[in-house]
Image (cartoon, rainbow, N blue to C red; front, side):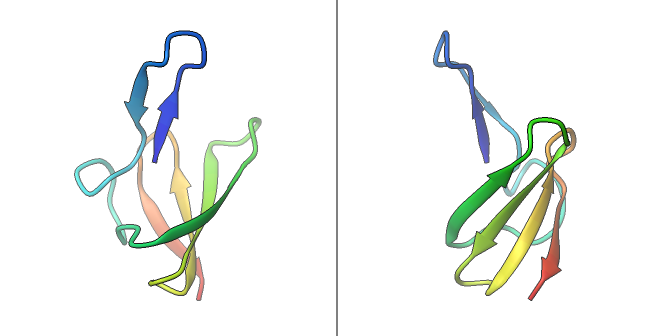
Length: 65
């Protein structure tokens, strides 16, 4: 998961195998982001799960399987 600065195009890694802890994404399909919260939710086909990602730390957790 990355963040992209829409003005400059600069990218910042939010979560990847080296950033954050928890299950690594394998085949992400969709993403839900609420700008007022610090958690993003991603559905992953291979994991057959919904993963929460804490955007401040990159930590990942399965919230539904």
